[in-house]
Image 1: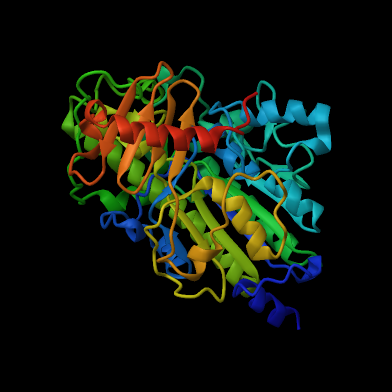
Image 2: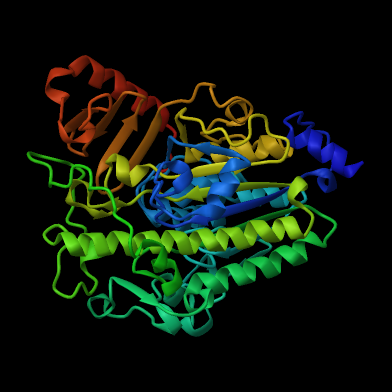
Amino acid sequence: MLRSLTLLLISFAVSVSLSGADRPNVLLICIDDLRPELKSFGKDYIHSPNIDKLASTGRPFFKHYVQAPTCGASRYTLLTGRYGSGSNSDLFSRAKVFDKKGDKVVPSMPAWFRQHGYTTVSVGKVSHHPGGRGGDDWNDDSIPEMPNSWDRHISPDGPWQHPRGSMHGLSNGEIRGDATLMDVHQSTPGPDTIYPDGLIVKEGLKQMESLASADQPFFLAVGIIRPHLPFGAPAKYMEHYKDVTLPNIAHPQQPEGRRTTWHKSGEYMKYNKWGKNPNEDLAFAIATRKHYAACVSYADALVGQLVDRIESLGIRDNTIIALWGDHGWHLGEHAIWGKHALFEESLHSPLIISAPGMKRAGEPTSSMVETLDVFPTMCELTGLEAPKGLHGTSLKTLLENPDADGHPAVAYFHRGGRTIRTDTHRLIEGKDGFHELYDHRLPDAETVNLAGANGLLIQELIAKLDERLQDADVF
């Protein structure tokens, strides 16, 4: 009876009257700094068989955009379902407000599921800090990023000592101190556990087995750090790219004229680069891109472990799986090596939602969606009424029909202004009111600023921005 009810639920005949024990599980996989650099998203040179297999059983969203081009702010939107300020400290700021106002604050996604009978567990980098705590080493239990949200929030740090060490760790326990002394990329022989993500997924599998044997549904979030800087992965994943010819970098020049969103790639450039600059050295640019690709393949293998364990535990037909990249990453486009910009490459990331019984499973959708939409979607798929105050829209219609309509995507950054992306254009508005308008119907979309000749369109897009962000959380 339980299985038939669950299959009906996941086939989108959702009944909000289901008891907690009848609801499907949720596995949320968060991957850091992952642009749509996957074979299933059109990058044929990438080795990503496990994520590609997941995409074949679900709905890949080819035009998914995040709300901010930085980790903490993007994860704020994923986990709260609300627009924020664009700062990496948004979750910690929300926690301070929660301490004062409690139930008056819109509950986080894990808190909402926890209130409705789910056991909620996070492992690795799900919120901004791995393990979800503050303090000097990000392990202070008295400073949670998300109060009352997780039954367990875990960062298995091993030789990296603490979550701060894991976040920027290289092989065999190397911790970042002076970034100029840490290599920007690395490839070390050994098993998956010689880098922090191997321990994260090992703990995720352990938690999954415990949760699967319990009597209540679970919401398990596993956060994989790679391909975040520095680009280090076990050497076996570099083997996929040893003889690969990468395509040329699209529009690799620094933009001419004024640009509100361009920057000097400080996060990348501060590492040891052996005196080389990828904007000036093509061979080094290729090396960086291949190490990034190796990190993607490493993350892909770890995703495969998680999905395979769901299947071996016999709970795949009772589990919704969502895979989400927290933002994009420039690999030389606009002469940027990093995120922190409002260009397409910083804001475009992969999203896959897979649930048994889906119609037209495996067909991608090119309809535009936002990270903001994940929270209400997970509610609808599990039969929960969404809490009041969410800013996003459930993607249930697109999960039923990949040809259904999407909606424009809004993003912002506390240092760089705000932007709106439609099917045809991107408008960027700097903090001082300077505008950049790009037409994505043109081959060099975000290289030619058309703002001067399109005043009416700019006014229309600004009105949409104002409407969408009027209730944003600004701390």
